[in-house]
Length: 134
Figure 1 (cartoon, rainbow, N blue to C red):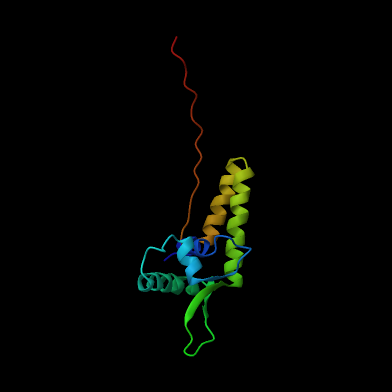
Figure 2: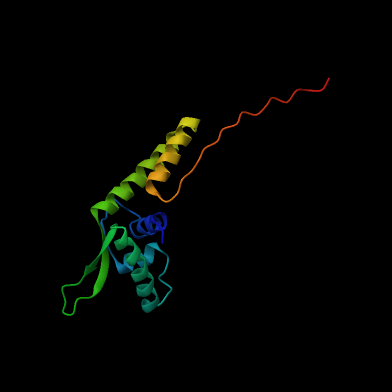
């Protein structure tokens, strides 16, 4: 799973961030529209995504105090908070920003920073004006 995909899952797990930084499994199932699925299927789904979220340092598992401890939720890490904050700020910038060559270049630079394995090139060509036939 790429960082971009992991970030999408993090946003799905924390739809009301920054108001909530820790969510229960039930809340995750609700926000991901998975309530109709069985508990076993949902736990497997969350566990798979948590492997990737932990790999990128975006979230950590929350366990009950019971003995034996049970996986009961997810907590966003500091790195996850930075990622979510950055996504909120980028989305807000896009809503109010005019698209220009400069903003496109900035977006490409940001995308490459977030996805270091990808290199994008922006090529700009000016169209020749069509000359009307007389």
